[in-house]
Every structure is written in C-alpha cells, then in structure tokens.
Image (tube, rainbow, N blue to C red; front, side):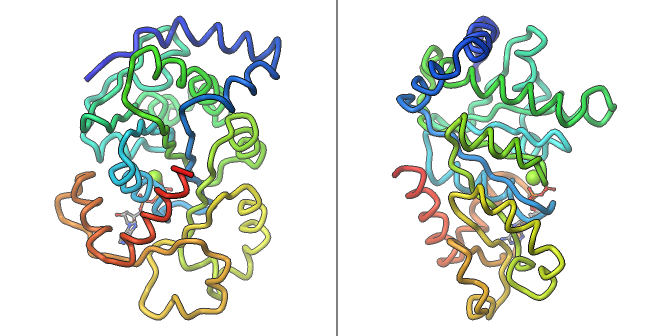
Length: 264
Ligand SMILES: Nc1ncnc2c1ncn2[C@@H]1O[C@H](COP(=O)(O)OP(=O)(O)OP(=O)(O)O)[C@@H](O)[C@H]1O
Ligand SMILES: [Mg+2]
C-alpha cells in the first residue's frame, strides 16, 4: 500500500499548463506510456463495475480509479479502507493507492461519494475534479514507479456527453460502453436515440447479462463483445466476482477481447 505524495505537487503544474497551452498536454499524452480506459453507460446496474474489475484482473499492470461518485461500489467491493481517494489532491491531501496485487492497484472514491451524497459537490464539480486528477495521474504513476501501463476508470451512469467527449478527445481514453440486453430488445425502442448518442463515443460496445438465445437476436450485430449472466458468489468480493464471470468460457473470450483492445 502506498501514498502518492507527489500527486499534490504535480497537479497544479499540470492544470496550469493545460490552461496556458493545450497543445503541450496533447503531445505529452499521445506519447504517454499510460492508456486510459473508461467504462461508461446510459443505465445504472448494467455491469460497469463488474466488468471494469474483471478486465483489470485479467489485464494486470492496471491502476483502477473508482470515479463512481454516486456510490463508490468498487472501493467497497475491493475492501479498501476508507482513506482519501482521487478527490484528495483537489483539497491538498495525499491520494491513497491500494495495492491489490503486485501489478493491480485501486484509488478509492469514498470522499467523492460522501460529498455528492451530502450535496456538497455537484456532478459538474466532481467531474472537473476528476478530470484534473486524471491529468495528473500519468506523471504520478511514473514518479511513484507504479508497475502499470493502464488506468481503468469506473464511472457513474449517464455521464454528460461533453464529459465523454473530454475523456475521449483530451485524455485519449478508450471508451467501453456497457449496456444490457435492452440495447437490442424491444424495450430499447423508446431509448434508442439516447443509446446512439452515447455509442457515438464508444471504442467498444459491450452487452452484459445476456440470456440464453440472445446471441441469435439480429440486433446483436451492433455489439462488439457480450457477457452471459452468471451466478454471482454469496461472498461478494472482487476476486469472487472475477472468478464467477470467467467461469463461463464465452465470457473469458469476451474479456480477452477487451484486454486485447487495450493492448493494441
Ligand atoms: N454477467 C453478470 N452476471 C450476473 N450478475 C451480474 C453480471 N454483471 C453484473 N452483475 C450484477 O449486476 C449488478 C449490477 O452490476 P454492477 O454494479 O457492476 O453495475 P454498474 O453498471 O456498475 O451499476 P451502477 O451504475 O449502479 O454503478 C451487481 O449485483 C452485479 O453483481
Ligand atoms: Mg458501478
């Protein structure tokens, strides 16, 4: 377990550089050794957290950021102590980085969720703070010599479209759009415009919790990877969830596809 002491000093430099000269940041980022991957969705409960953590376990050399300020599920699933997470840099505290395995780390999101629930910070405040924190992370990773080349971000449902745009274009993130079977079943009819607006930012479309026979639905063609519904363990740990998802051979292949896409 480590603390990124350099985080606080790194962030103001980077953010002022961003305001003064965006081109400089863009060059740094395309040459950066760290790849950002964002799991996002329209609806809640479709499996962003589940698939983000499963992908992290399979990929390795990953730093996961629990950016879901609505509840910080991922932080509790990993059993992380209630220490300052990614938001801490914005108020001058060190950011706690939790070591899960030698090449898998998580930055918790408890205080972001706390501020949000108490109404002390809005979605926009939190997104701005998150964006600043993400900009500082590649340098912090290098300075702290974290053995990672990928930063996976778990997000709240229905992020604003201009935030997706910022993540995709300015952070050069791979955008993994997670949905469930509503995307290609009749229920989706009323929502199809929303889905297509969100899918415009996607690098990959992942359909989760598929039932037997769904693979034969014609609409499935717009999906790049699909994950079958599995039986989840009673012990709801990150390791248990990871194992349960991969027990199904088709899921294992689908997650390999996600990992391959990250490594490209
Ligand atoms: N393939 C699957 N098979 C069975 N259960 C699943 C699967 N994927 C996710 N779940 C379950 O569905 C629920 C929602 O999953 P998860 O929390 O990952 O979704 P989410 O998109 O992160 O939700 P939120 O938007 O609320 O953060 C959880 O109880 C999870 O265990
Ligand atoms: Mg979640």
